Image (cartoon, rainbow, N blue to C red; front, side, top):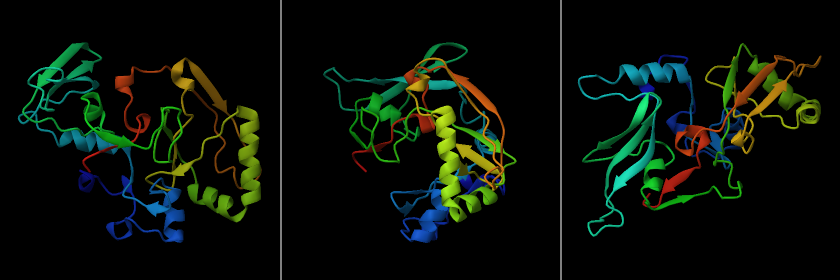
Length: 251
C-alpha cells in the first residue's frame, strides 16, 4: 500500500536504517516520530488524505464491500461454550448510519494496528501501556492529533538545536500561558507539522484550548491561533494514536 502512494505523500527512513542506533540518525528521525527507544523504526509519516484515496481506490467493489465509518465493537467467538477453541468467528460493527452489523468469516485478520480484535476476543497479548497512564514512549493515550501546513520546520529545528536556551524559554512560556504545550514534529513534508495534541483525560468531557504563541525570535516560524473542542468517543471508536500499544504474545 505504501508503495502506491505518490511522491511527497510519505517520508520515513529506508530499510537500511531500520534498527539503527546511530545517534545522528536517531536524532534526525525522532523529530519525525520515526525513532523510539534510541532506535530508528519503520514508522513513516504519511499524508492521511492520500492514504485514504489510495486505500479506497485499491478496493474493488467486485471483490469486497467497503464499510466506511464503521468500528469493531465486539467479536464473535465460542468463548464460554463447550466448542471454544479460541477461534474468532466474526466481528460486530457499529456504523454511524444504522444499527450494528454482524459479519461472520472463515478468517478474521486483525489489522487495527493495536490488536483491538484480539484483545476483545480474549486473546493473549503483551503491552507496555499501564492502567495508570504510564508506560514507554511508544504507548499512546487518547488524543486529538492534528496538523498545520505552511510551516517552515527546517527553521524551527534550526532554532531548537542552535539555540536550546531560547527554545526551552519559549516552550516554558507556552506552558505558563496554556498549562500544556505539545511538541511539534516534522510531517511528510518539511512544511507540515504534526501535533499529537493534548493527552486525554481531557477528552473525558468537553474541552477546548486556544494557542496564540508568537515571538520575535526565529521560533516564530508560525504564530497561528487555533481552537479545538472534542467529546470522548465510545471506547470502540478510539483508533490509531488513540489506542494502547499492544503486541501479540505469539510474536
